[in-house]
Image (cartoon, helix red, strand yellow):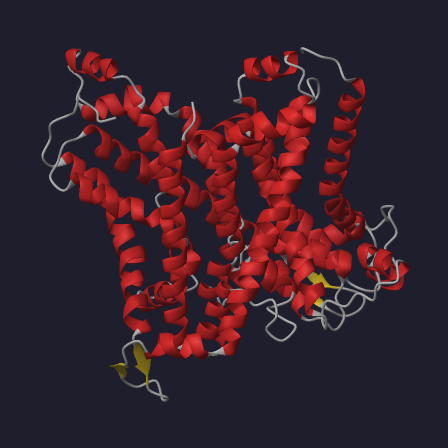
Amino acid sequence: MEKRVRFASRWLPWVLVAPQLVIVGIFFFWPAAQALLHSVMEQDVFGGDLHFIGADNFRRLFNDETYLQSFRVTAVFSLLVAGIGLAVSLLLAVMADRVVRGARAYRTLLIWPYAVAPAVAGVLWMFMFASPMGVVAWALQQAGIDWNHRLDSGHALSLVVLAAVWKQISYNFLFFLAGLQAIPRSLIEAATIDGARPWRRFWTIVFPLLSPTTFFLLVINVVYAFFDTFAIIDATTQGGPGKDTAILVYKVYYDGFKALDMGGSAAQSVILMAIVIALTVVQFRYIERKVQY
Amino acid sequence: MVERRPWLDALAHAILILGVLAVAFPVYLTFVASTQSAQEIASSAPLSLLPGRHLAENYRLALLGGETSAGSRFAPGLPMLGVSLVMALTIAIGKIVISLLSAFAIVYFRFPLRQLVFWAIFVTLMLPVEVRIGPTYEVIADLGLLNTYVGLTVPLIASATATFLFRQFFLTVPDELVEAARVDGAGPLRFFWDVLLPMSRTSIAALFVIQFIYGWNQYLWPLLVTTDESMYPIVLGIKRLIAGETYTEWNIVMATAMLAMLPPVVVVLAMQRWFVKGLVDSEK
């Protein structure tokens, strides 16, 4: 994969990478280092000195019930968003792959939600569940469910999960569709000739061949659920009721900017960084190993 | 098609249509709400599914601001749309330009520490801005860049998604082209401008769509670095509209939401082909 032909120049490459390196240095590495630093420091009550306190911030976090709760909420939230999102998109993609005519039109009609901002998605879904005018809220009342996402954490979580999944359907759909279209027709035809019915064909041939795509999307969706959904939560429940929809990144924001607990917030950021790095490493390792031709 | 199963095809269409409708439904409701008056909305349970007749005045209020009959003041949406536009364009164009240069250097030059530089840039892929909000905010504040376009956009240009994509693409460009250029006496910059750039058009287009949307939809970062209402991007403005909660005039909120959705959707639909190709190819 290495290029054999290269240009020789001592100074030009440096000039070319300089802008990116400068920006990355100032706005990425420096803040990351600061986060690491702050996470092992404590600030005086009056905002005075910072002094080193070792792993105390981390210890405090892991003994803090609200932090552990936030962990739990995030885990449940991402599993729901990833699971439901992938399932629904896969269904739509399989159907779209099957349809010969109109596949283009369906694709156009299904990809535009990608453009919707998470914040806006939150507002839209909030509107559908608001009372008294919310259409979905009304339907639920008719069905005898007393919907109140301000008081009931289950309802609040459902609301943000729905909004998050709705927004992600296009992205997943696109990748699944591409993955499906990359499966050689000959394989499917061979199986059909052998008498395998569609359901069987799907599970024994298509789904396994789709596994790199599925895995990739799984990681992407989990990362999405961890971070990009901040706007949805801020627009709808603000982490409530209480702290029941405060996913980890929301807590970092809240603790750092509302509660002004710099050390704790930094420690949380560091933990989040570790999780994301772990996820990315797992993803890359897996992709390297499992590419099927 | 090896076999014909018409009922399965019909089922496929049915599911797809259902999917399209389910996906479009929230936005349809938004549109309907943006055409009704506030009283109509507040008094209906649920919202009527047919559009109302207040489209023009709602959008005028949303765009230009002013006072409604119920007495709430609305900040004009037009400036916020402008902020979003500048943000999105700056991030998209900035990222693309910087990444083209870096990817070009990394792939086509041999220089000391090349591998280190590559990894340094690559590592930024792993950490989205949300993970470094605290300290990045401090850096911006210390540099006096709060409430500025620079503060809004530059930290978001730091990640290397585009560089990685271009690198992957450049690696697939045949060496013969470089040699041919060399034989013709072209230097590296000439090669870049005359050969590489035109070939990268599709990738650039796809990245533009992705980064434009990324920039337009930014929420957490602008939330932190702007305190001046005149620097709010539109997505932030919408959230603020429903924050009051005492009497939300949903019609204006929904009109603003429609306005906020319009440009990115237009960009996606107009550049759909490149976008899909770029999105799917970029993650391999």
